[in-house]
Amino acid sequence: MGFSNWDRPDSPISASGQEQMGGEAKALGSRRSFLRGLAELIEILLIAGGLFLAVNMVTARVRVESVSMEPNLREGQLVVVNRLAYRWTKPERGDIIVFRPPENLIKRYIKRVIGLEGDIIVARNGQIFVNGVALDEPYLAVTPTYEGEWTVGPDELFVLGDNRNNSNDSKNWGNLKEEAVIGKAVVIYWPPGDIALIPHYDVMGASEK
Image 1 (tube, helix red, strand yellow):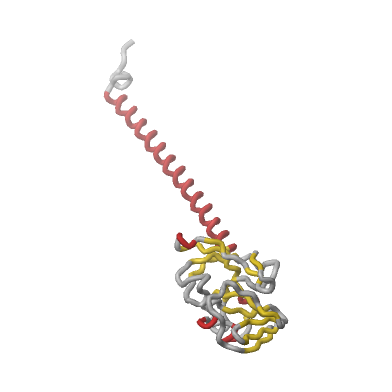
Image 2 (cartoon, rainbow, N blue to C red):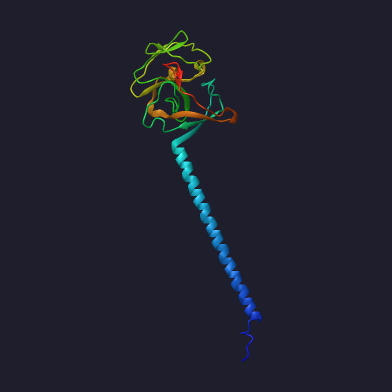
């Protein structure tokens, strides 16, 4: 029995058909590889996006915009803020917080908590007194040159910059509503040479936590 040219395995038509089938298989494999790579890329982007949103919900990054917190925080430093620090607790004296000031709700200020609800704050003879007790403030480079007396109302805080005589704070515009607090400053992360945890001072007890 003979073969026709059409049926012969080594005929030009049969070889061409095999090449076409091989090309289609390669194209199909290439499409599958592309789709698999695209799916992996989408998965990575979704995970990265989810992590970014989660980190932003828990923390904020703030640039120190003035000299008001020197010598402890310098202008230009970048700080991580814990948004959840006061979710279940209230700010403490000595905490460094980030908030939106009553005079400009668009801006973000960074200051130290000095007075809590019900406190009477007095600035006199270069010292700050809370309820008659002189604060121990080893973090100050200069003493305040101003004088005054303030009473902290319900759900309010009294905040001051560490650079006492060059800070726009509660001595200028009064008490801060607790609801304006964004979070607690916890870490300096830029520039690299300044990376450090931000210490908390118990200003009423002369000790550092």
